[in-house]
Amino acid sequence: MKLTNPCCAEEAHLPNGRRSWLKKAGAGTGAALLLANLALRTDDAEAASLTQAQRDSLTPDAIIALMKKGNERFRSGKMKPQDFLAQKRSSINGQYPAAVILSCIDSRAPAEIILDLGIGDTFNARVAGNISTKEMLGSMEFACAISGAKVVLVMGHTGCGAIKGAIDNAQLGNLTGLLDVIKPAVEATTFSGERSSKNDAFVDAVAVTNVKKTLEAIRAGSPVLADLEKKGQIKMVGSMYHLNGGLLEFLA
Image 1 (cartoon, rainbow, N blue to C red):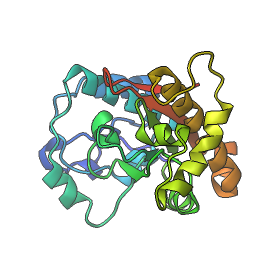
Image 2: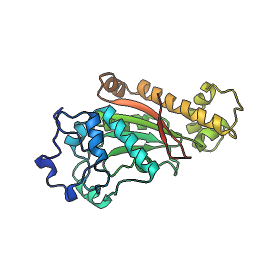
Image 3: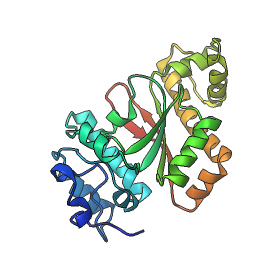
């Protein structure tokens, strides 16, 4: 892929000299230099949205590293200023997100805020229990195979109500079928304590298992994404967001 020098003409027109969260990869630079450059500019106002050249210059590992840095800023309370209006304007004619995030609908776990991202940085798919469905697979295939995203991030979280519902065998309309997708994770979770929705440790252990099972379902259900991962063009990774403290823990 052709790398873009951040000093080149392409960026000259960007409002306020804006550097996006993923804009620092010049020709020949590696992830370490990219992160160093980003760290030197954490006070820059976020204006223009991510360009194709900027996104294409990054590896999946570099994108994940930048997500971790964004979460560090979130947890420290030192998030970047975001000019969402400028980002909206600059992305009208095209979008080049670097990742697609599959997360839960929980109102306390908004991925873009947790990772200190702006408009145009990621595709975001949300469903209770962050499960894989046929529609989600199609959406992720669009994000990666067509639009060029390089990371598929599945994000579970602590204290998940959908996980508790699956443990309790809750029954309610269409929610029943959704929870049925999560129930195999309950059975597959090895846990020595009380296996109850009232036991937070067990709920969170099941949530971790559920993230891993979602990744398995994505690979099994989408030969398109599995092939991209096998070729090294994308990376699929799981994570757990901790409501207490705000850490986004990336799973091995």
